Length: 432
Image (cartoon, rainbow, N blue to C red; front, side, top):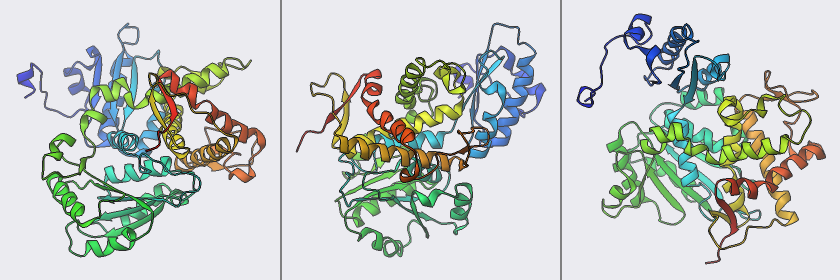
């Protein structure tokens, strides 16, 4: 297939210098490192850097796109100076298809549904994940980052997996604060076990739950069959079902009129536009631009790493913008609003003092989750230390100072102008 497209196939070890030189990596404009093994991808990347660094005087720069699955590898690679040095011989873009997949899914299919969860609501999100591999883990983690609702009820995540509970233990070892933000239940079972429904019934009988099923075992054919079985077993009320398959939503809808939808199609998470166009990051970029505009007014502008424009910004700060941007829609749904095109004739939403306070507290809790799930801890120090991942602000709302509360309030007030930067607007939802 590669030869049919006038490409070249070179057999060899991509970590060996001679093989890389044979592939003429120093003449390339883009290189994709997407083997299934993180250590192999990293070693290849380092070898490519050594080769290209010798030609640093050249005006031609190499864009290296590195796929990593393990968070610990992602974090270690971000510490390399040349990862963020735009004047180097090589610039590196790290992406994780599983994280992209989970983020896209939650943007398009919110766990609090289109109506959202308001302050006085008793509704509770329940996410059923079938298969706790890389896809399942990424979806659970993104839920921990994003699943913060105005009524204060934590999402309940129910994992169904063939493996014993060591996967749960390993996950919680990597994210020790996870259960502070999500209730995690683990059911050891085959997806097609006749006893599975008995394990699920106690959760399904819970009143006022918003249920989402995501079937992401390795076998995509089995996923489709299992999703259809679940659809027959589960009442059609507050429920949405997704399966990791080869089929689009349109193709799925033609199968016995099923309401099952597809999870993780590559065109949304790992094709060129998703990686380079950074469509997932549109709102995150706008959030950073809003921050820069505000910081430019201050005398110390330009002295912080966070003051760099988006292309030069450290991945750590990009990630923080992504998390904040992904939660904007959750906040708006909580107060009966929705995001629409700026061409929509409805007026922008106006916050009442009560709504501002609710959303500011929600933003602080989201920020706490972001920090703690990325390894930050509390420390009694004057200001945050990114290198040590320590902060004096990792405290509940009741214990933070007025200045920090005002920072959260200001973040909420700026939602309208952030949306305007991407041609969007927040409006009150029309009453049905």
